[in-house]
Image (cartoon, rainbow, N blue to C red; front, side, top):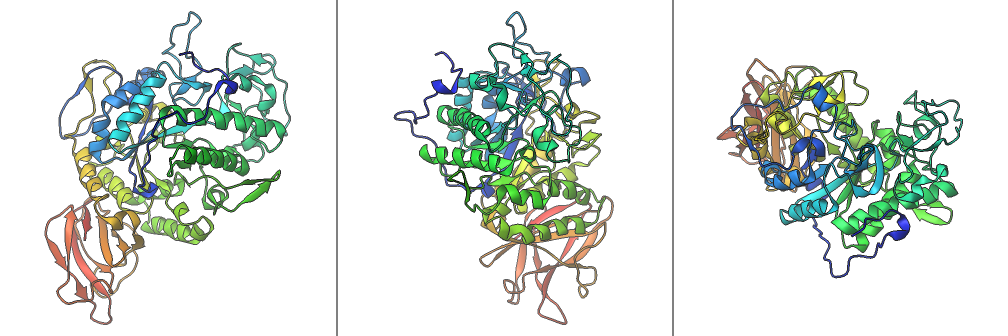
Length: 573
């Protein structure tokens, strides 16, 4: 069947007779596995080298700067690897046709540096280097059989480098001046063809100051061309085009959610309008929990403007609702790794949650449950890039993902973290290693014997079994070295502990941040839940046996005593 090339050709009525997949699991019950499609697995039949220690991934500087050959089919073939890790959802990097999809002779260009997917030239076609529309349909179907959701990374802030300014040389932002349109790089791109209208782009040149408004919203991402996502007639038409293009994939492939790229560089109303329209269409398909989360590299004040309390806003006699369900929790990403590794004060982490509590009422109930992570593919603002596992012991990697699984939020793991990938360098490509051997067509790194993979899977297995880990209130716990004088940990090393409490049930999570010293600290637990003599807490991860709940000599407080080896992570119930 011929692929559509314009919005006018799209049929957005639900496919007759199709039962769209729906599941009532809340977003905070998901464990997301983030995949860079080009780097996860190709379509070859490969096998891992089974071993207990970590793998480094594949690819040298030259190889990682271009397409490596990962495909959608490769993901489908290895869904069980992801499911057995304990993940319940996958998030795919952008899969629509990017710049360089074809060379001049019509062949696929695998030497292009657009392997990441964020330089889209055709929103209505899968990049042929990744596969076909049917490959995506097959992947989603296979995931749904396994009760797994599929989220697509979508780019509505900018298009690829699909046209040029006069003279075809770089133009740079200057006092919000709009520059003339030069011409299209290809007469048949971008698609949908409606996007060939010059009025649908800001045309302000490349951003130079990434923190200055309106430059950050009107300027181009380097050579990628910024859309005119404004609240004027052209902007509203553009947004309608982008909304319908993405509804098309919901209809065709039964997608379960979108991660929206570069939210900070779009206006709040543009984001709200996109999300609200997408959510309405999801309801039309019968999908009640369509997840919309955004990339917003900013603090909580900025986050509030985008995920808000779903308060209606009137624009041109139409009601617009703040649309994002959640955003990636960059403030946690900036604080958690240093605490886990023993480099920074635990109060940096504790204060992060105090800030969440202070902002919770302005976001609504579910807005508090941000997508949490310690690794990602795009380390913005960092000149030197490194994965969490770089120069890091296995135990700290396990503790970091264990923390995400036990703390509030929707935990997300970046592909390869479960194998201890340790990429680092002065470019993002070094943290985007291939999970399959680029020099040996028979080998991949999907090793289920890796100790990191196995331990994460053990913790993730508890996540759906214990309601408190998904829905419970979270409290950091005071600790003591003598059983009398308690306080929140102020410095390193320490026993970092917190509880999840739900309707009379307490789960305690504790971690020794020291890399060399055993710790034997006393940790406060809930005095109402543990108010009877003879109460014990049982280890359910990291150790065996029970510990007695003790009463404070001077008051009604209750505590337990924990002896933890260096970097030991435990869970008690």
